[in-house]
Image 1 (cartoon, rainbow, N blue to C red):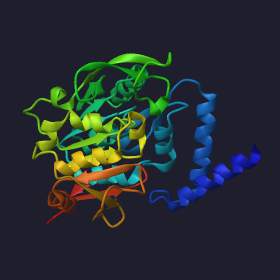
Image 2 (cartoon, rainbow, N blue to C red):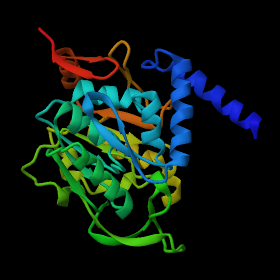
Image 3 (cartoon, rainbow, N blue to C red):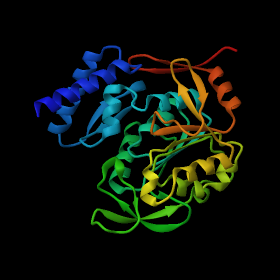
Length: 306
């Protein structure tokens, strides 16, 4: 038991040493120990503070939000990309919002409008609490499954952040939930700038239901999870990639240190998430127009003088 704990602490320590935002690895390791003790002692969700006076509730099982606490920004490359790319006039669609990790960054820090979609009742309740805690008026909350058609589907409700649509009801841990396509949900007159999709392998069905939006000139970025979860639904990952290719989206890796976008062949194999961009010139121009500076307590976003 002790050996396992020591190995875990060492692994975290080496991760902290490599993370761009961690200035003191030993201090961050202490924060890691502290928060893990607290979530095991305090049974109810408690409030923690993030950048720009953003707050969120935390409790045991919130792996992404807990990681956000000690890493400061958990999905570092992806979040930094969004902070550089999005502006306050954009509309961001967060499919699989969970408890709002990305939504808090987009609507809370950037100030853009966000449609945050989360079908699991308890997770949706936690998402809603985080939005209300920060008094965010630019977030539309949707408690539905995003698919390729309207239907009633079974969804796992006790898998924590791994909750997903299940093919058949084989467990008491599932319930029925309404599904809808993005094309049905989003008004045709509305321009969507960026979509994040993290739905544990159900990504292809989400894209199949967004044909109109994918064709839109306004939609230029899709941040999508590609980690072989698709195999549960008996289809190949290339089927997702083919849909993206069909609509002229190409994969890129974001280098947050040099602020560079590097074109890839298929996907980002170093991360569960891949950034797909339709028009790279638009992204580059946006990066040139904006400067993002991260201090201990604030993320400062300023327009560059060109």
